[in-house]
Image: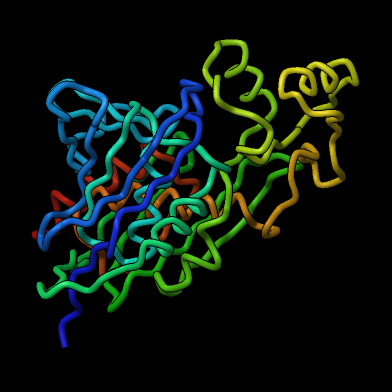
Length: 304
């Protein structure tokens, strides 16, 4: 029996700070009719323009997945999109009163909670799938990145990361069925190396960040002076490096939380194909750029 499309029973709002802008943003999920798909709407602009969640609208992947349509941009969409696919929501309008989604804790958790609280409603129309009927391969040999799609009767994903550092070497994560997303992946937070964090701070690129929005890995010796400076910057009483090589800003939900977050990002970026997938995804060192290029390959090769 065909599965049915799904939307929300009522509206749900998530409010928080944009990671890079530092502005308070309100993101409201609105129910949508059958075959509507996923669309964003900038309610802060004249005419409330629509931006379709479409891989062809990706214009930047440097610090998240940025979409643009008719000159209107929205930033950091991937965690929102992952929440929708993770909960099997096909049709929804996402209203935003700023150009960046709230970062919350750097995961999909707050979006998932808001969507579940609103309730999910089955619709009458049958759900359509992207059926992976032949192998699709993306490779970036220079950066040791590879993504592969192969036929399978349901959506499942294997991810391997390896940053070849003492604090973050090889990790694996596996999603066997999309139903696992809520409990096993939605609360897995983004991560950053200390040197990357310092670059972003020095270039005024994370105005809304604090030490609760990412796991910070430290892969070099750090002086107490530097730690004190970070403590002051993030208004935290004391910053220190734990034995696992991470700052004491938070505790890991899972030992392999970084790999699980990369899997979350794969789900979010592949949501931009516009329909749920039936197939197996195998990814090695994926990132937003490679995820998007891989999605474009799928779109080109698989007819749907």
